[in-house]
Image 1 (cartoon, helix red, strand yellow):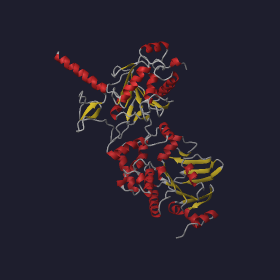
Image 2: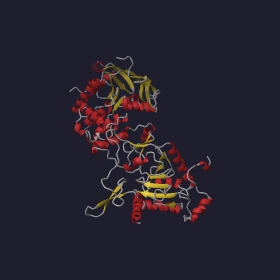
Image 3: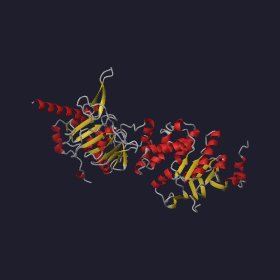
Image 4: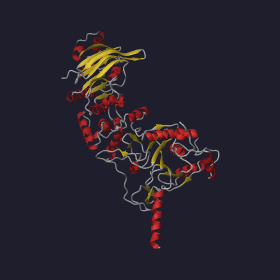
Length: 310
Length: 259
């Protein structure tokens, strides 16, 4: 197969390298850090993952210049699909300004010379840890998740050979046992993050540790969703407009978290809220975990207020 | 009574390398019947049970099972792996000697018992819970322990959980590997009583492997005596135990301490 038949974002060639070099790229590194052979290997795994939604494809995960658990899987996927024209956004727990997000954004700004943004609507490529942006994603956007443990059955079955067989034969009764245990112990399904989903009516998938609040956003999402687990060496994917249903019981249906407060900054009642302890006297406030969503709402409210006065 | 056996075994031989674990074993098991297999350690009892219950592929010979939809079929040649595993989860049950092999120790007793229901598609928590509690009563487990993990249970209770976990799918065939091994005598007696009652109530057929002649005397209708991988004697339990013909059976029966 010729390299040109791959339809993923543009790869480096002499002209783009020169152009990117002008944009402040580090010299001495290949475009987006990984060498071209590694990217091709990861792209092949990605194509297979897209072709079989929810299926975990093994890949040869590389050592990256950050520790396991900090996003080595996500960063390799991002490096393999990013092109010079991409606009990158990186979020960590919904925020653009946390250490992990800042570091990874800077990493690609320096090794790939790409434009970066904090705005969900402007980004073509979003690498995320633990959240899906509140702003609905569009066709043409790619969401890359960092995944610590890709195997949803691991909790009940420690043997990899056995979990693979269970996936192959769609023997997913034990997954229901996990939810049963929750209800038996807490009176409700207490799993709040990494809530197991069934993709395209077939594979059970770990959606990475996103809150279950975000699970419904995966369902029939127009964006491409890619998952990379660096330590466990697995890649999986949810293609655009694919059905993603959360597991539940008939008498204990799936439900997302609710808060009885609104965001203290933007007043949003429909976003995922973080509880922030503000002092040591019991003071606390609830804020949007998605910083871009919060800032966007405050900006538009400010604009409305100005329009009102003039 | 139907005229097809539930399980038909012919010429079953299993070799570990050149070592013979069991040689040319053949028998028919009829619905509702309990077959005991006795013999000393290393006689090939457990290997035979593993071959019968599709956990091990025998080197030679056939094991045919009377499936609900297709009648008598060879479980190794005619059934695919998913079908075999489905059979193991629904129509068959296996009670292991060591409860750790048969139970999920990190899951509550109720979850263990209800797993088979969920594996075949039960999705209503209340109904699952009700049926699990019903089975707790039937195997004489305390209802209050339903949410406790089985690793905190006594050996006898763990075996009861295993039995309930298997019988909840209403299997037609149960494999029991030393079901009373490692239990003290009074607990053994109660467990045997329970098993005998459940077998009578549910009409499940069973293959019981044990070295304890007391167990087969109470449970089994028919008995096979194995030695060195071969069946040396085969007959009705009382007949074999009261009037053993083969020298080894005579030795086995006479080695029981008469208290």
